[in-house]
Length: 399
Ligand SMILES: Cc1cc2nc3c(=O)[nH]c(=O)nc-3n(C[C@H](O)[C@H](O)[C@H](O)COP(=O)(O)OP(=O)(O)OC[C@H]3O[C@@H](n4cnc5c(N)ncnc54)[C@H](O)[C@@H]3O)c2cc1C
Image 1: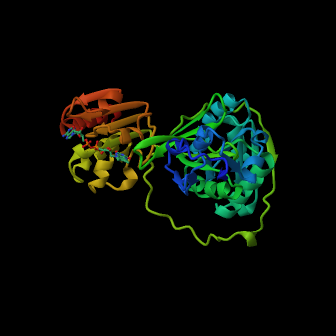
Image 2 (image 1 turned 90 degrees about the vertical axis):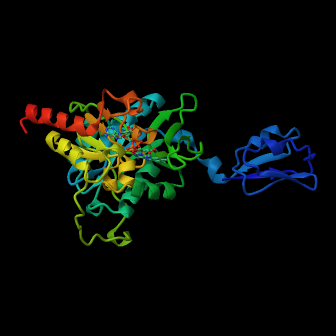
């Protein structure tokens, strides 16, 4: 990417550069500054050298990319079993804001055997243009043809930003696309924003095991800027079927014999826990006390037609499988109603549920942090409160 050069003839050995390096990559050897492999080419030392003995040489690739040639925000429109994934619409909603902040167009790109119905939906949710590659090789999903189709479109039309859902498909082929194009990819973003001055994409995601939120900028000379984003992080935009959009079709430049995987058979796994799409979730935490006690949560969920969620403490205790975990290292959910039962409301749990429309917290500790974000809070013993709530809903709903 770059090389740091220290001119031995010019260096006076003043040592001004040594404390300027945030990574401790500079030291003195025989009265001259030397750099080691810890250098990240941040350029801090270049600026402080009083005699301009330190320079940075960027490699050809870094200096020849014309970032200005890249424009528009693209969203990958993912579909499975004839249905567009809701995360694609959520990203069109967020993509609209990014495109407006930059002053460019919002486009979708779709791959499949027959994409007609999906094109209409992408336009209804805000895409001004839709790029389409149709081929029988694109169904069922395989990494090679999807990556090939995406790279082909991106090289030809040069989008500035490309967004994928952090789904099984998106997580899988976005990485291949990024490495083929030689650009960056920020995975599992929870926030996207355009820097008002530089117009670069600021991508926020949990880092260091989820203990901090890091905002990441792609290296300015690499394009497109690419992110995967978890489902339910952004709200659904409004659908408007009266919208019109331009459709651009490109063939798949790949043949079956160039694809390294063959799909022989699909074996259905155990019934998935669909927390992401649930409108009501009843979650239990450490306050539930045991696997058997989760019955009280399941009974309320049953009456409400809700999905069952859990805090990590309940999952770690082995009371309920990981698929139910809500939070930073579990699912991100955005139901209409979220019941938090015996959950204190740690920052990591909140990261997965705080955008729920209504939060009902049941906790015996009035100081529990969950009450700070709860719409309705009930202070009391959950083993008394939950059966009362269940009974009332049962009567009113006639279940
Ligand atoms: C990197 C990292 C990632 C993490 N990811 C996640 C994640 O994805 N999801 C997640 O949930 N956590 C996550 N955690 C863990 C998180 O920090 C908390 O430890 C966890 O959320 C606590 O779960 P809890 O609220 O169930 O338990 P506690 O914090 O122990 O709270 C239990 C609550 O139950 C109440 N209670 C007890 N008995 C009763 C009763 N009879 N009636 C009513 N209330 C009662 C108590 O007052 C208490 O408030 C993560 C932590 C780290 C460091």
